[in-house]
Length: 175
Image (cartoon, rainbow, N blue to C red; front, side, top):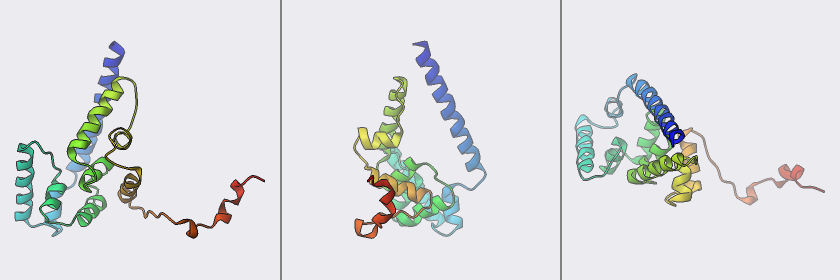
């Protein structure tokens, strides 16, 4: 039992360290809403409206990221907002992008994180994204790969068999 408690303390310490580093990084640049206003994506009134909407949803028990609130109110189109967030480094976590892209809800993300913590207590290591796909079935790997490619600013292609030169794979064929 003592080993499990030590493991939990280590997990919490690492999580706190990561959160502190993320807070330090974010402290060095304007908050997302302020940056969106400064760059002309949202008006100050629009930002206030999104923050009020976010707070109202929180009171109803629904957790929304600011980007979700902005997108749901139609202040900025999701692809434009997502591109801005990635380009300017406001979201590096795939999980946040999944919520922002509306592929999963904030509640589903929270449930996956809780399940991950429970699994860690039993000595099982599993990523939140694997839990979302394999255990909860709310996401598929195809969509996850698209979000990861977007996060890393990579072009992702999925060629058809007619577009693939099978000669490139001849070394794999045993004679």
